[in-house]
View 1 (spheres, helix red, strand yellow):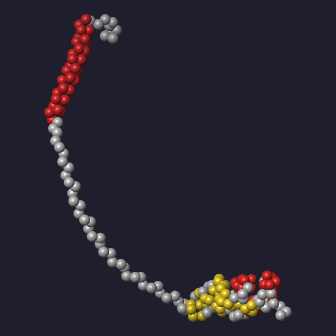
View 2 (cartoon, rainbow, N blue to C red; view 1 turned 45 degrees about the horizontal axis):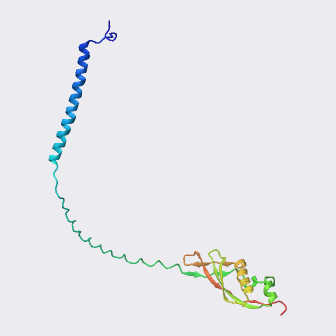
View 3 (cartoon, helix red, strand yellow; view 1 turned 135 degrees about the vertical axis):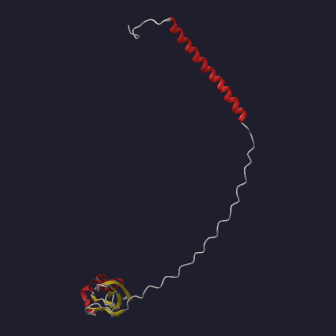
Length: 183
């Protein structure tokens, strides 16, 4: 018969198990209470109190003097732009750009006449990129028509610099006279 199939436990064996359990509880209790008491008693003896005096903060040394940064010498001036050798000139007569059909209707109705002179800024492609009146007709419609016609119709040979490259230039037009037909 095998040990696992035995149903009865002998009395000695039961007594031995009970004794082992009681012994373990006894030792556990003794260890916990005895050691805990001794640990507490020892930690109380080792605990020493004393006043902590704070050390004054270390005196701060003044920061080192800032290094003197010498300013870099000023940058050399840029090289001069190439001089204009050849000025821009019109590819035709500027006065021939104006006709009687260009007379603004509002100026005709008002009977406005006058003379205008413009200063044109010529781009590197020979086109008029800016127009400002040097002399006004006294009529806003005539002044506006003067600059509009010059911007749209005037063509120039661009100015050349000393390197032969096209450059911008300004040209002053001859006096442009606006007169009503029949007067």
